[in-house]
Image 1 (cartoon, protein in one colour):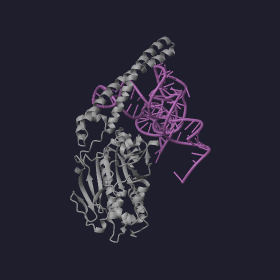
Image 2 (cartoon, chains in turn blue, orange):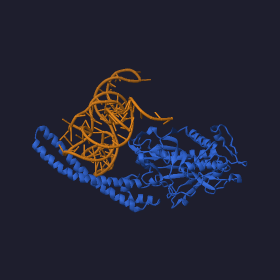
Image 3 (tube, helix red, strand yellow):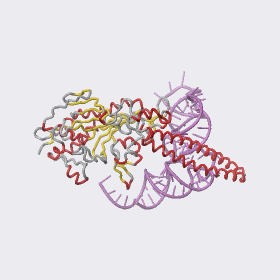
Image 4 (cartoon, helix red, strand yellow):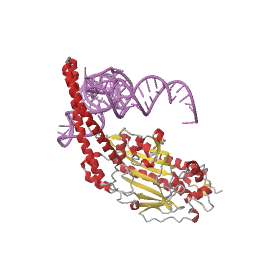
Length: 438
RNA sequence: GGAGAGGUGCCAGAGUGGUCGAAUGGGUCUCACUGCUAAUGAGUUGACCUGGGAAACCGGGUCCGAGGGUUCAAAUCCCUCCCUCUCCGCCA
């Protein structure tokens, strides 16, 4: 969430910054008013409390000296102040709650570097890469010459090679669930091992819980605004995580870290669960959009000064994996309208799927500033000043496997219908060179 | 799931209604002293909200797992919930 002081002291600046992502200024005016009232009321409340506190000390003194008559009078006086106080207390609590709720629903202020836009059409393709052309700047993409045998959608390849069984997944769990079989399942596991090993030089590997409390979902900004998108187990009031970002961000919740510990780098492999409400029927074939998919996440806590470099590092690590796998991809600099609620700046990585002709989002690398750290109350002690400050949080997928799996089997499909296994994956796949066609 | 014990500051741990934001010990940092990689002594050491101040800092309020209640007054009494530990039950 935003620092209320920002809204209190520079309302116009906040309005202007949030207008670029479609927040109406009335919402901010209302919050400003609530804050103003809340402070007025809490000051009055504190003054009454101070009075009662001092009377209570008086009473104690009188009791000790045996003057119970005067003590009785004071008690009466205090009691009547107490009645006045309780009205103010509930008003103050009500205003506090209103302020808090409003603050939780206001998105982060975008970075000044994020492109301004009104829809996802305004996202900027900043560079692209292919095995043939290497890294290229700009949005003028030359796709490799994919052969006809590569232009077969992954769901057809999957059932042909018996490595993807969507029909039975649907029988078991419904549509938009996947089931990998045989070498298809091995391939998923190989991708996971490849990625975790790739980050092991600097990242602590974590295997977090995948069911979390609602407070944990609030910390990353997934609640209260996006309740509809999450699976909720009502009986136990637990949420299935939509990404490992959720438990990893809350790992340091309510902690004050020594500056020497920063940056903290964490990586985790988990399943991710998304209801995808409202998206049925649209780009949902095969593995394009699933209720459950596997992903390796990389995440960091940094000082504000370290954040920019870390953002580059995370992006580089995600891109490096795509390059190792030899997949054509492009880097999108998300515009203000398409930026996630909690993010200040996000780069999406989209891999090209020759079988469907679509660019598939396989990673999203974001810098959140202190927005999540305020929600989760994650701070650090500045080694020089001794002051306590909020950390910055950043994270990215590296990578999301279902879509990678799809792009991979299409890209590496051979003329004989088999799928070649990229060299980096072979050590994780019993040194097999291909997934054979039956 | 059942029975019992417990959750206090950076750590350990005392505190059963007022003099408690909290003893004591350890750690931290500062100073002093001792000619040595340390001992001793003195001091220091929480977070949050809010008002004042350029700032150092000063005032008020809140916080002893969380939320409610009783009372003039709650770490201390009552209720609900969460968590930890021990035993039993169940179980990958």
